[in-house]
Image 1 (spheres, helix red, strand yellow):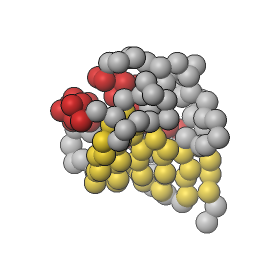
Image 2: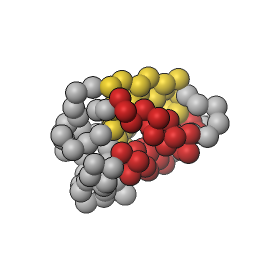
Image 3: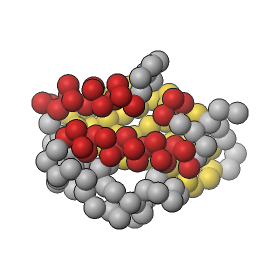
Image 4: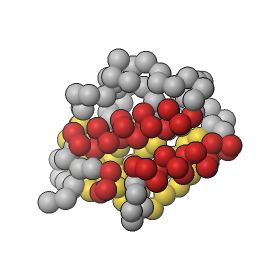
Length: 128
């Protein structure tokens, strides 16, 4: 089976990695963070704004791969502050309103950029 690199036109440029890889009807999405299309941080210090942007980026990457948020089967989220768990759950509920996927939530010391508060990666299917 061949793998297809997904390069969404409306998400910041990936440097040293791919935003997603599609193999057959499965899409593996790299961790999405709160960077806008120009690569600028959205919502410095504002968890809600960062979570919103990360989900919007995830949505755009999935769309470019022929999938959607509703087709996510596994979600892994990294937070840098445990205090943001309730706000993360609120954001997740807005974007994944029904039948949530299998999910893992991890609180870690830091992400690739120190100002990032959340990173969300996913595995999704493409509805045939």
